[in-house]
Length: 245
Image (cartoon, rainbow, N blue to C red):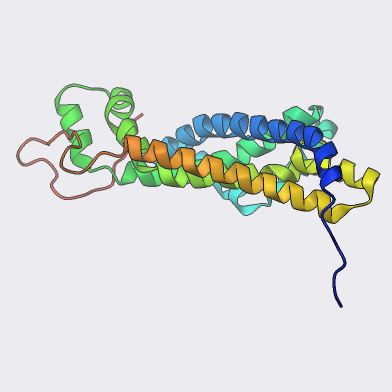
């Protein structure tokens, strides 16, 4: 069977302003969610390396739950189930909450792995200089960690950009939802959904290029990377970095 289809350029042209409006909503939703997720995920990643076991257990349980359940189910719980518990959120609030909480779980694992990649001698040297645990984490560990985790953080941003289409199930008018509305009016799903796909590809491509430029700018070669060497006799070899709270 030969598919008799030709792209309706006039329909695409008329729909483009509405689709671009949805694109801006998608981008705003994603950047807001990744920003909140980065803050929460960084804290969770540090807590997972903390010595007090209650802090470690709570953060581990959070990561276990949000990585073990589908994002779509989390959206349904936040938007449809929480009102029965007395907490009602708007579509925008529910969308950001679901994406942020889900993203934080993955960012926590990225941060945890990044912190563990820092040689323990850095921490020991900072302690020898009289820095507290929080000062060591803020001034020594985290700056080096974020340089190393830019690539996986970029992948998480791109994944979240695409996953943001799931909030269309609660009628939040992002890019995919705008496309669905146009399809119900035009009865031309191929034309609209192909256009939506092209916009998503353009978005992810631009984000990938920007992240690559940031990665190149922040990457420090091993020969020029600043480091703090431990005192003679301090724990030699690469050991797991832990955060003392």
